[in-house]
Length: 273
Ligand code: UP6
Image (cartoon, rainbow, N blue to C red; front, side):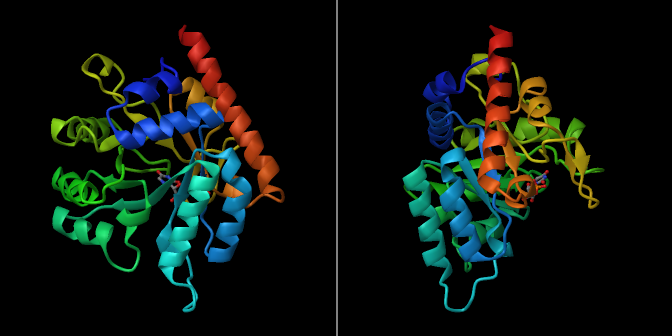
């Protein structure tokens, strides 16, 4: 996949969510995903309003937000959806589901967050086996809107148990025809499943642990630069949280991330031509 343009992949991607995302990326010229890891709902809405034009995807952790009793969660997620239409980005709830199929169905559809109703994309660990994908897909199929799933093949944090054989087995799970139109890609640190294009495969790789410099956060997070992630390692979407929302001028810094990540992509495409 890393040898083709986002635009051409947007025509052929096996998932509807993937086609829509790749189209947005090509049109807006951005492969930046903002990880809006803030706990105050008003701060989140105001930041998303400002940063919406820079991003293809907004990543949420809905369960870290401190909702005042007067703010219904539904009205907050409805506002996020409104912003996503206004600025043309998709929404990715970084739920990292990790339970048996039956339990994740409830977690995805119901509870107080009703994730499936507002998040275009979510993700899951592969550790429970294929039942987790089957369970989530059944819920997604009942929504009537494109819904995509990413599997965690590897993590950015030091000492994580992903990668290697775990990643190989996660890839094998993702390749099952049963969820061809649902599993859109991976959270991983480099391209996954290269060489499957002949079979019509195209996994979108999204990568956290990105900073303007190499470094870490003292709690295991490891940062690499947009150039390393996109140009050298063939990842598609760069996920940035504190690098942007912790900056004095988040809009200016987001533009630096967008520009560097986009140029890294252009460099990669040119090199492969
Ligand atoms: N995240 C990682 N590493 C992973 C998977 N997910 O950092 O392997 C998520 C974190 C956080 C964001 O949950 O929301 O990506 C990274 O934030 P940061 O840029 O502030 O480090």
